Length: 83
View (spheres, rainbow, N blue to C red):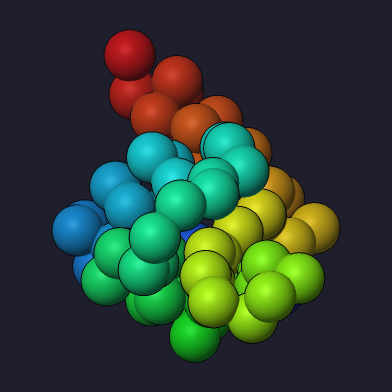
């Protein structure tokens, strides 16, 4: 059993839905949502903090890690098997 499969199997149904929804896209905006923070904690997404030159405004961006993209692809393939 590989790492991707092990991670996918340990996720709850709600967490699997978050992976499918979030790990397919990059994101940029205000404060990260709880889902993005969760994916960052699982090392499925990486969050960067961006600051303006004057230091007065902070934005965040997140993108899936290679592992996050692989777990998402695995979950999608499992969903397609059941259809």
